[in-house]
Length: 164
Image (cartoon, rainbow, N blue to C red; front, side, top):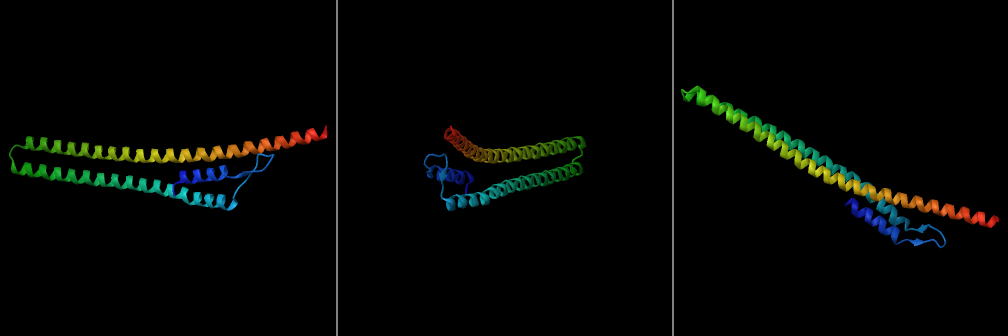
């Protein structure tokens, strides 16, 4: 399940909770909140697993690109050797082989760069999702903490007023 959806569900559960009269406290459905927290504990590792799968996919793409580049280089070397054997014009064969090897290098570099761009895009989106989720959790914590402090201050003010 999507972590963002779970955070939204937790926020909704808090919004739907009944306020304790004359206090900043909420009566929450404990079972529902704990259920959502358990689901969050499951979802966050799934997001991490997804990031690991993306990283593994990047590594696989890079390895595949290197293999392809090596295969292209080997083919270029073989083709260059055949041209040298077949043609008497050695300089033309060498020039062509160099072009093929350079093209293979450029192609493999372009493929590697494309893979890096793709992986960075996916990882950036994942980072944005996780950052957004963390902000929601932190905002929730701050809200609860400020409500607790306000309740404690109100109780202290009431006690001070009762003493007078």
